[in-house]
Image (cartoon, rainbow, N blue to C red):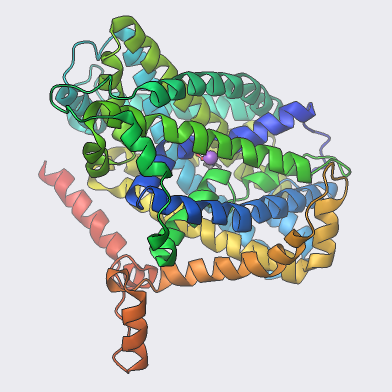
Length: 514
Ligand code: PHE
Ligand code: NA
């Protein structure tokens, strides 16, 4: 094990790096889609409850676990967990987390590479004069790797490799590199985000086109912000809300442990963790919800948004919508929007490199250079299927298994480990030691009972999701001896039917047929 004296340069550097880790593509691309797909205002209450009862507790758990392990010179989740529960197999949760990071980073950097290409095309004026269909067609052509006609042959592959190289290069510079990127990227991201969000909030009906005379940006905002209580009993909405909270706060993967391992023993955790967490929520709830949805609703109408919400929506439509602002502002809009996404993305993908690098360092004493390049190579190998088979839906499989299910499983195990095996007495001491704010004592109770319980419920719910999401009907059926009908999307059914294998097989077929 190599002891290191690396540490964060300053408190502001630490907070920006941690906020950069959390603020990501999830805030601007994933949140709006999750919100729309789960009923808009129906999503928001479960989402906020999950933030308070699972998100904040997990931030405290991961920050304090990281600082604790760092005292013993550890840099990676398996070693950090080992320092908390000596000799227990539970430390292998950390190894599982490292795989999750590599799987997530592989598709995450793919989207990040789109943002680089779209900055380039916005500046070059590629989208000038394109119809809405042309802009959408451009994205389809871009992601149809072998037949792409966007300019450079195999353009998406080259941008993907370039994006990985940039990430690897910064990671090879160690902590200093990450801190520097966060110090430049985060302020720019907030600036661009505020400008675009103001546009979203003030668009009103002025954008309505002759095709969509009823288009109104406020329809989008109202849809998101009018609470609907009917969904409170819908477990599927809760699941989606929990998944989004984990993804957006970057918990459940070990990146926060790795960053926090570079804290000093008496460094504050409570206030730092809350600052980074609330900064993420501000960017997500205030800025993230004010750009794609209202701008798209303002030009194309809310119905269009409801029918077309997807990860790619921002790429398929935004350049066209910016064009309505005239050539100069369209270029600026594209530059700011895709530039913002790039900074959001890179400060997060860098974080996903640290668990692997830290582990190789703890285990074999590897330096940053060696760690970073092997990380890049692994991401490339894992990522190529998402690049080549994006249109066949491999991407969604990665996001579901690595970006949702694995996070919940990891979070559940580490919470049990922290509050019940490490023990809440020691745990609470770790959270409050050196704290610059008083943590409400109720969180001691929440972390010990509520958070683990909610995690177990979410996990079991995903495991056994019933057909048509009909919980009460299936419970009745179960008790009257007629069994339980699993939904096709339940984890158990997906595994037993090897839906994943089937999908990959069809994906491969369709590529060969082409
Ligand atoms: N929180 C990041 C986002 O919102 C994604 C992420 C997840 C980053 C897990 C690191 C670890 O985009
Ligand atoms: Na986020």
